[in-house]
Image 1 (spheres, rainbow, N blue to C red):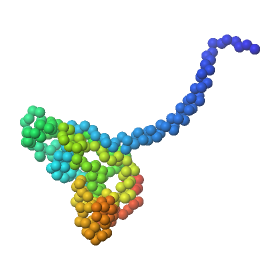
Image 2: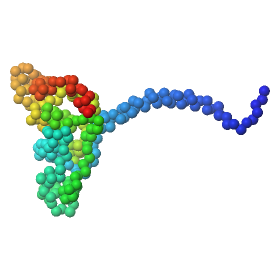
Image 3: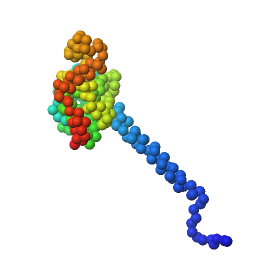
Image 4: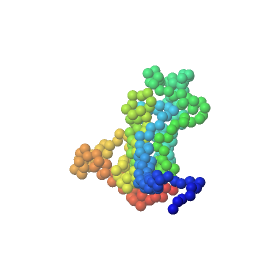
Amino acid sequence: MSYEQTDQFVFPKWANYLLPVLLLSVLGGAAVVPPLVIYGGSAETLNVGYQPDQPVPYSHATHVGKLGMDCRTCHNTVEDAGFAAIPPTQTCISCHAPGTDPQGLPTGMPGAHQKSINLKPVWESYFSGEPVPYVKVHDLADYAYFNHSAHVGKGIGCVSCHGRVDKMGGANTDDPIPGVYQVQNLSMGWCLECHRAPENHLRPLHKVTDLDWSPLDNDRVKAAIVAGDLDEGDERGAQLWLGTKLKEEYEINNPAYMQSCSTCHR
């Protein structure tokens, strides 16, 4: 029996292997790609350590750590509003009086430090009325609702979320960390850890902005140590003991509300 030659296209024999190769690729991709996307796109992978360049080399280590300025001097809305305000240029100018240096350097500061910073964007903002274009470091997802006043007003310290910003500096400084960066991943799981056990973070309200505060410095804790209710030097034990008492005093006793989806997703 013979076949007549036709003009129709005939697939080569190696094309028979395309289907199994394609199936193996799809199955392999289904097993590998999702974990890579989940891990590679997670908040912990993408955001922890995020440290954008800022238009002004502002040093928290200098202002907060060395000069002892309170966080609320600049972020003056944290106790009353849902957001922490970026200070207007007038706040900076209240300390750094505008000078006439053509390079934008502050004329009212000592020479050595004067040469180490560049406040030109501040002067431009001051005279133009336009805000300094700072880059947001802790940029929470739009689908999550966070209220600073609700946390600050219940004894959650700045350091719990933002870390030791009093040690974070600016460009061209000798500070141990060269700029503000994101310390926590801000993921839902991380938030729930605190919502489920807030006693691990609660502190007296007047110590919310004290970044160096320790529960061992608290007078009630010291009295409990003397009474034998706490072990001396046990900082974690002191935090749990004090945090549990503050949790009751601050009336944080509704686990259902603390863990409800609608509390953070509105």
